[in-house]
Amino acid sequence: MNQCKTVEPIAAAALESDKILHGDVMELYQTIPNDSIPLIVTRPPIWEGSGSAELRTVLGRESHPVEYIQKLILHSLEWKRILTKTGSLYLCLGDAYSERHSLLLLPAAMAIRMSELGWILRNEICWSHRDPLPCPSPINRLPCHESIFVFTKSPRNYYFDHELAKKLGCEFRRKVARRSGNKLPLNPEQSFQ
Image (cartoon, rainbow, N blue to C red; front, side, top):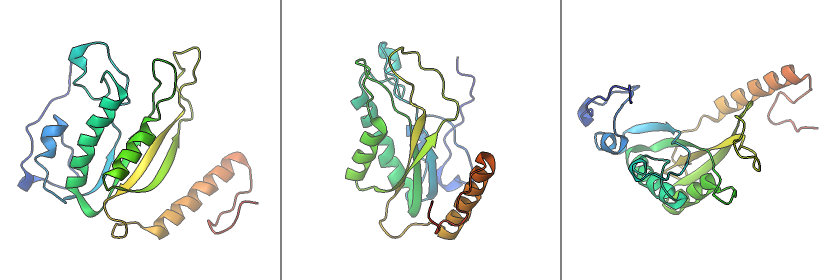
C-alpha cells in the first residue's frame, strides 16, 4: 500500500524554485515549462524485471532490459525539454544481471543512447558503495558502484564552476589523506608520485 500523498500537478505559471513535485512523473513533466530547470539530479529505479504483467508499467519492472532503456529515453526527452540551455543533468544509474548471470551494462547503454539523441556527456562519476549489500546470487558479485553521468544540452554554453570544483577536489584529497595516513597531493595540479 502506497502511503505517499499524491498532490495535484502544479500549473507551469505557479512553478517555484526549490519545490518538490510528487505524483506521476510523466504527467508532472507536462506542468513544467520548456527550458525552465537549471539542474536535474535523478536516480531512476534499477531494472529488476518482473514476471507479472501488472507490474510491467512500473519503471524498473519491464520484462526486458531494452524496454527499460526505452522508458528511460522517454524520460530523457522530457528532461531535455525542461532543462535550461545552460543546465546540467546528473543521472545516477545502477546495473543489473541478465537471467544468464551476465552484467547488462545498462548505464553505458543509456549513456550511449542519450548521446545519440544529442545530449553532451560531460563526465562519468563512479559512486562507490562502501558497504554494498550482499548479493543473493551465489555466482555473481553485487555491483558495488553506480555510474553518475553528467549531461548538458550544449557543447560549450553550460554552467560549471571550475574554481569550486578544484576547491572541493582539494578538500576531498585532504580528507582521504587524513583517513589513510598517506601523503596525497593537496593541489590538483600536483602529480601523484
